[in-house]
Length: 259
Image (cartoon, rainbow, N blue to C red; front, top):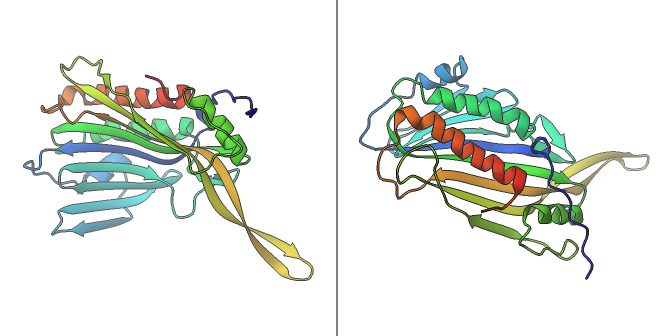
């Protein structure tokens, strides 16, 4: 069967952001309060605050630039998430988005760097950078053809394929000078089909609503320091480690699944 010619890898600016995430794991014996963190990060107060006292969970949320920002403290975990609001500001070929990865990532990186400097930021033994992003396609066939450019070792039939999902973790040694530190590079690829409604006018029926599907190459990455590393990450190295895991994520986005 003749397959479509493999498309070239597209620039990072074509990828549209659904979620950007930073997660840090701390020692549960450490006691700290995040009540001042939101204002230190954004200069504002959160729109909502939710406390679940029995579970030890504190969630602060509010608008940030074109999306919604959520700061969560839970047992063992601090999570900072920038994601689609209820009414996404942008749409590319029917795919809702905060904006392009190239435009949105620098601001999120800046927030994480600020987080390392906030009052009472605890010692942490792991960190992760994650993203959920989409590369819009005109149809399913183009989505699978485009996906093959990123998965060069996988044969994909763009005409007859459906419900395809490819996931792999390729671990690497860290290069920031911390003995024994390794980085997990988890990447998950698929073609997403997103339903949206079209409203059109009909002389006989008035407004007519129809449902269409939009397609996109869909990529989820989770770049994280390995669980086997038992020591706390040096505080003076946090920013450097984060830069390293972000660079590893961008490498996957711009080169595909590579070792």
